[in-house]
Image (cartoon, one colour):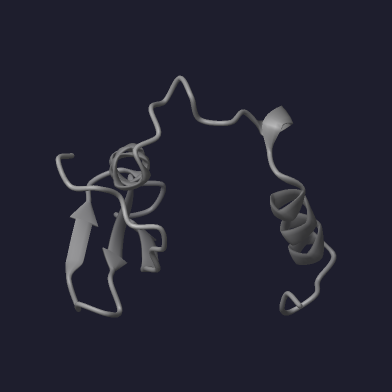
Length: 85
């Protein structure tokens, strides 16, 4: 991408399957602009997000390199808590 990445992005993410056991499709809606972007696969969605924040696949953190905030958020979701404080 030629544009400089923004320091904050928010999207409404929608995921659905095409048919029983079919391929996952996705769309992102930018609540500020109303722009919607569709994806034919989860892989396409991830590539788009990496481009938005300019992370190359080889520099993306592995599961072992995740931040404490991500681990904390996931443990709250798995523990059944509704929201994050």
